[in-house]
Length: 514
Image (tube, rainbow, N blue to C red; front, side, top):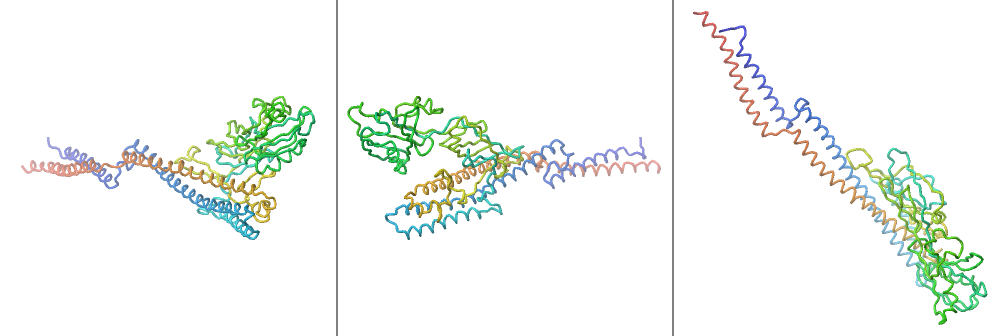
C-alpha cells in the first residue's frame, strides 16, 4: 500500500539519525574535553565518587604545600639556633680562659667580659629578629602560655606540645608518688665524749664533683668536721650539717643535688688494726632502702653503710607516670608533652597535695593532612631563647639565667673571681648549651620524622588518588575514537537512508500520470 500523509520509512530514518547524532556529539564532547564524565547524566555514581576524589586531591595537594612550608620554618629556626649554639660555645671558652686567674690579667678578663656581654646581647637579638614571613620564631611567640603555676611547687615548666581539642585550656595535674632523695650518709655520735672525735681521723669524702680527704685531730668537735667538709664542697659536691634523732647527735653528709646521678661516700682512711677501736666505721649509716620513702627522724630505719645514692622523683602527670631525673619530670603523649623542674619542697613529699596548673594557649599548630581534625594536626612549642630565660640553673636557692653572666651581674667574671668559683657560670652555660641542642634536636626530629614522612606519604596518596580519579572520569581516547568513527559512519548512512525514504513518497505521482 502507498500512503503519502505518513512516511513511516522517513520517521524511522529520522529517529535513528537523531540517535546517531547524539552519539556523535557525545564522542566529540569527550574527545574535546578529555573527560568521560562531563555532566551528571554521563555517570551519576561516577560523578559523585570522582568529585569526592577531586576534593581529596585538592586537600592532599595543599597538605603537601603545608608540610613543605613547615619544613622551611623549621629550617629557618634551626639555622638561627645553630648560630646561638656557636655563641654559647664561645662564651664557654671565655669563661674557662678567665677561670685561669693565675695566668690571665685583670685587663684580659675585662676584655673577655666585653666579648661575653656582646655574645649574650647577640643571642637576645637573634631571639627577637628570627622571622619567617613576618612570624617571629624564637622570641616566645610560638611558646605555650601557662597560668596557675605555684612557685613553691614548680620551678620551671616547658611545654613541648599540648592539644586543645574541644577545650580553651589544658589542665595539668602533678602528683608526686615517690620522693626525690639526695645521697645521705649519717655519722652517729655515741662516743664517751659526745660531740668530739675520740681519736685522730682522716676521712675520704667523695661526691659527683670529685674526691677530697680531710684530716681531723683527736677531740675534734662535730662542728669542726662539718666546717671542714663544707669548705671543700666545691671540690666534692658533698655538704654536711648537724643531725639529731632520738636524743643522739650526729652529722648528715649529703650530695648537693637530688637524683640517681648523685651520690655521697664517706670513708675513713688508715683504719686501726683493731676493728673494735674504729669508732667511725661502726657508726656510719644510711637509710634502709625499704624505708627511705617515708623515713622518719630516727635511727631505727638505718643500715650501716659508707656510700648512698640519691633517687629520682616519680610522679603522675594527668594520671600517667612521668619520667623522673632528679627533680625534673618529663612526659610525652599525643595530647601533652612537657618538662618540669619541681621544687625540693614538693619533690620530697609524696603525700603532698596534687599541684595543678593550666596551659591556656599558644604554641605552633601545623596542619599536616587534608582534613582539619586533631588527628591530622601537630602541636609544637618553641620557647624563647632570650638570655633572660636561657640556661636556668638552681644556685643559692634561686634560678639563675644566662644574663647573670653579664658585667655587673652575680655570675660575671669579676664576681666569679671574687668568690673564687666559676662553677655556677659554667653550669648555666652547660644548661644553656643543652637547651639549645635539645631544641635543635626536637626541631630536627619533628622535621625528619613528622614533616618529611608526612610529605612522602601525602605524595603517594596524591598519586593514587589522581590515578583513581583518572580511571573513573577521564576519557579513553582509543575507545572514544573508535566509537566516533562508528557514529560518523552511521550518521552518513542515516542521512543517505533518510534521503531515499523521502524520495519513495514521490513515486505516487506515477500513479496519477497513468
